[in-house]
Amino acid sequence: MRTAVITPAAGRHRHLTLQHLGLAAGTHAPDQYVVVAMDDPDLGAVLTGREPVATVVHGPVGNGNLPLARARNLGAARAVEGGAELLVFLDVDCVPGEQLLERYQRVALDAERRRSPLCGTVSYLPPPGPYGYRLAELPAFCRAPQRPAGT
Figure 1 (cartoon, rainbow, N blue to C red):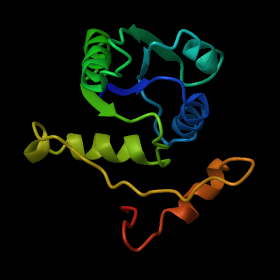
Figure 2: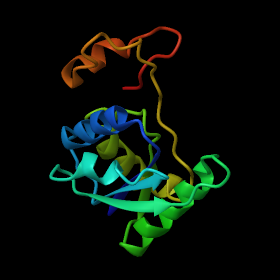
Figure 3: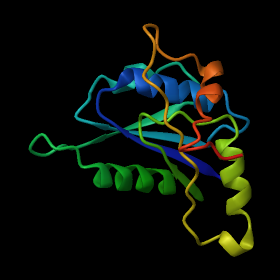
Figure 4: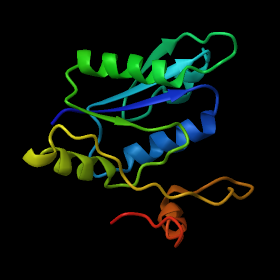
């Protein structure tokens, strides 16, 4: 199943870098990684030379507002044009677990759920230390009882 990850972003380059590293560390790489840059001409440089290869789509911004829904739709259209069958939308501050795409693909192939929207569990991280987050240490932060990580 051809899978695309779609992320709208405006600034927040450190967040995007961590997300990109999370995708690279995953058990399944996305077939497409579409990042919609909203009024951020420098965003492409953050992704250059890294795996998975990202396609940067530039989305317009009006009146200083970030049109997230419009950006997601623009990214989805690009992904579908590229042959994507499963669209995974991640906000720029989301770091995917190593099995995120593998699990979405497995559930999406289930005939009973094929036409249903899927939504994974979200865990919130504490504020980063002075040197940011280390990708290998993130799973330990995701065990908060008020919002447990899915298995």
